[in-house]
Every structure is written in C-alpha cells, then in structure tokens.
Amino acid sequence: MNIGEASKASGVSTKMIRYYEQIKLITPAHRTESSYRTYGDNDVHTLQFIRRARDLGFSVEQMKALLALWRDRSRASSDVKAIALEHIAELERKAAAIAAMTKTLKHLVSHCHGDDRPDCPIIEGFADTLEDIGPGVPSKFGLANVV
Image: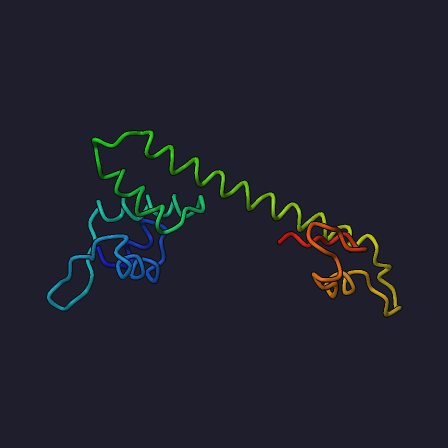
C-alpha cells in the first residue's frame, strides 16, 4: 500500500510517517522503481503501535525504547513497566503544575472586578517581579516565585 493508504489504516499522518522514517523511529519504507514508498501490514501495525504510544504522551525516545522492547520477544516486562512508570510520574508532575497554574489564575480572576476601571489584579500579578516576591513567597495576588 502507498503512504496515503498506510496513513489512513494506521491513523498516522503522511507527514508524521515521513518524519518517523527520517528520525529512524521506523525503518524506511520499501520503494518502487519510481521511488514511491510502499508499506505492508507489519509497517501499519508498527505505525498503530506508535500512534497509541503517542496518544498516551510518550516521547520519541520512550517510543524508540518501547518499540525495541516490543520487537524483543525475550524482553522482561519489568523493562516495559519501568518506562510506563517513569512516564506516569512525568504526567503527574505536569498535572500538578497545571493544577497550580489553574489555582493561581482562578485566584487572580476572583480578585479582578472585570469592569471599566484600569486596576487589574491579573495584570498586576503578571507584572510582579521575582525580586518583589522572594523565593517561595506568594505575591499579594497569589503568585509564587518557585525557582
């Protein structure tokens, strides 16, 4: 099948398929005499694997490791689990950071009158400098210097 058909079957865009070939995440496709890429069922299965891993937020490096483990029938499941647990920890760190940003922004929004006056705690909170609020100390609007 051609790249468009492989894209449709796998759910991975043609642009990403080319990119994955370029960075050697997948092996380069076979080429016809006229240099068109051709893909088989195994290629599509690999692309589907990558799509699922990407949908779960795994990095390219993590996907390389997972693909290598997937292809290695003598792999230890503990190696796969270690990558997944590392990724879970990373996702939880990101979720905590997003929750903190949301809390701070909600605090700023709750102190803004949202009227025609120029005073705005949101803008003032953004304008606080790190020197104004010291490490770990919340500013008057709830922002903290978390260096």
